[in-house]
Length: 556
Ligand code: 3PG
Ligand code: CO
Image 1 (cartoon, rainbow, N blue to C red):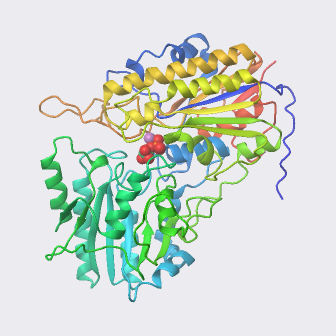
Image 2: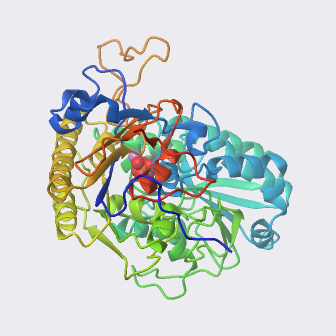
Image 3: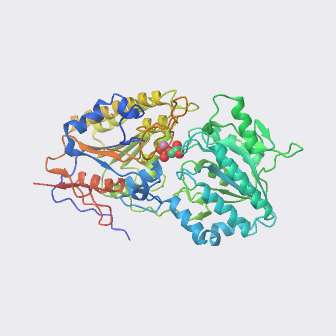
């Protein structure tokens, strides 16, 4: 059994109110005109580095430091917040799926056996993000899954593709769809009736999160399950081309839903009784809503019209607390003994807040992909409703001010020992690729930080500021060797909507931070997983011995 008791730190005091601020998508990189954070007025964030450089450092937020396969893997919110909350590095979904496919273990597991039962008479439907971003999914994993399914007797396969343009460059959906068509052709040559059945852009079709907008999931349901969509084409790539030609504002993220139909105009791949379905994304947040629609008998989020009796499995189990979905192909990382749970069990009263689109980041991801409270007497999680149905470059300030004010009030109330927030602006606006709006976004996030830091000042507390990964600090695709933005013949840059591999700032401060508390100099390669032990120390507690080391020490 877990020993939940944390020893008191020999020097660092208990009882200081601590603000834990996560700026989403806020990295440190080349300071030029495409660095929205650099261009934006961010006096508060700048001041820490200028006035207290010894309380400012960088930490790693990408690659193996956050449990991703390689140094080329950019960070993301799931792995970033998992590392922040859990204080240890867990091999994450991307890596676990890689090895389950490589060893063949995936095809021998309970989840695969469950869907395999449908192969003799039913169709296997694969729904997910067509991308090599490695954030939610990866194309080579889809390839491996398709190949393995056919080798294991799948006779009829349908892919419901979601185009990306967010974790990868906009416009790459064509390339991915072409690769998919080629792979499906090969499978047909091997005797499997394999086709694309439907397509839609990830932000408009299926991949909503945290119950922000169920219409998104409904659009996907209509196309994937019912075979109904506003557009119909006989060929997926052609469909994509036609939609792009018809709309100058077309982009991969918001591609409208369309279904593929046969010569007679009949959809080639609605999901029907006796079929099998796999949601191929390994990442949880944007698959949970669809998983509920596919799996839950009782469901009132939209009218499903027809609920097919299917064998369903997720690539991973997406929610450990809800056990959703019940069947999955790869075991998720077992993120246990998180700092959130430790702190609550040691009496640290916790307040967490963000707006809808990032709410689960400081609750669900922070707590190891677990929904709900550990102890509702000691915790309060506040969700500020996000604007829905817009792209955030239209409202780049988002709810930063509201989050800042809620947190400020929570700090001043003195009812909580830890006040934890996520400020989404740099990330959510950064993903739109709109540089101007992202600059406004960064300024708004900085103002929210100021609100909280001022409140910490008033109560004599401590603040900890960091980010989960880079995004807003680089809005241009660059030549990896020179760092120069890549420009086309007209001098236009290629816009970078995705995250980056940049390190992120880590800052401590506030009147409650004893002058003897110093950032250690011997941890130059520390990453997000080192934050949890650091925060435990700042709460006056010693971190569990298997946590990544704390970045602070007491120097007399
Ligand atoms: C998204 O889901 O919006 C992006 O793919 C990743 O962004 P996040 O990791 O910052 O949530
Ligand atoms: Co992001």
